[in-house]
Image (cartoon, rainbow, N blue to C red; front, side, top):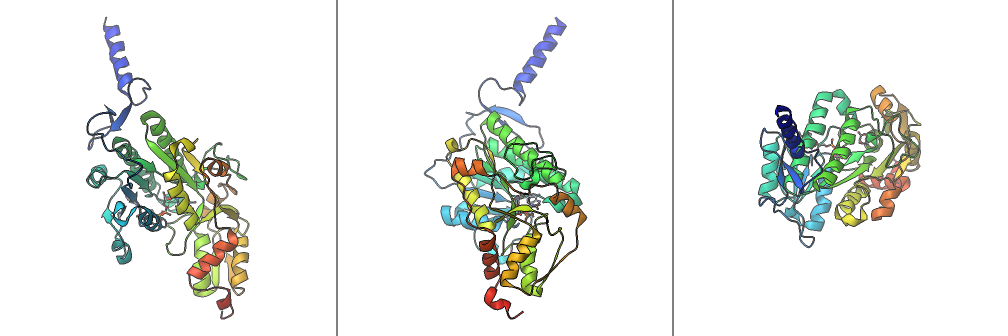
Length: 373
Ligand SMILES: NC(=O)c1ccc[n+]([C@@H]2O[C@H](COP(=O)([O-])OP(=O)(O)OC[C@H]3O[C@@H](n4cnc5c(N)ncnc54)[C@H](O)[C@@H]3O)[C@@H](O)[C@H]2O)c1
Ligand SMILES: C[C@@H](O)[C@H](N)C(=O)O
């Protein structure tokens, strides 16, 4: 009899645990300081709905990094200034602060995050907070906390409030055992950085919450992103931004990767447009929830050659950063994004020549000015 009671208790626990695939649809609900719980998805507090005809109410976490401000600008144009809230733990510059709603949000503070979502009736959550590949290796503990614990907060809040959740992944979610030229969507993923490990975790957890709890999770694996008016936050692909700044300021550039290190790259406008496109794509078009996207692939040498066409005097030298080189050598050289192109019509606009011309023009020079160096 005692054995039967124990078995019955164990069965009850299994049925109540997140691993149970039976019974009615459930969403995880976490209260402050307690572990995740499950509540029927038709519970009365879970009534936030997003009609396709309304504008979404968007929250961007980690919004003061390389990508967030540009994304806010694009989304505000589309959905209205007050419908897009930027958040971060840093202090915004005046121009950012006065360009639209900004709020302090630490993704490690679950209660604060939940309050922001509730008080602002958020319907789309764009989760940009992260420590990138190189800074992550320099501070594994913090990267683990922000990239993994922070993500858990985001997933629970998104599931609890029925949000559409976008989390970017990266070429860094692949590793030396992945096919590298090209790298398809589905293949072995054994990254060797805490950044990559946390991003594979994010992909898998997001997809798990999608299939298990119905979370509208959407994820793009970005290549290295190149932007003129925002600085990268400590990644392996940062050299491809820095070359433009140094070329214009000093006419010299010291590259921290080998000249023949090939990596997938994209201009920021393409990246942000892709993000909006996948967020707006009808769910029926998405045969997957995590897609590679790509625009071009080049080496430092090829990038320098293209810049030379505008600035023949640019002097490039190489002084390797062993950590970044090791990371780059384990990442995709070319990215196969055919599923994104077929499913929801992804198409990049910027190739290498357009990228270089655009960056140099934006930063205040072009080929006509090159002769003054
Ligand atoms: N930039 C790229 O080349 C690239 C490529 C692939 C994927 N991604 C992904 O896109 C996202 C945005 O990238 P980015 O380049 O703007 O990153 P970034 O490093 O420039 O910015 C990240 C932001 O996160 C914030 N942050 C850190 N800890 C936080 C916390 N506890 N709470 C809230 N915010 C916190 C930082 O203050 C920073 O502003 C990241 O998830 C990144 O992994 C970027
Ligand atoms: C590629 C991307 O995830 C980021 N720019 C990094 O290098 O870490």
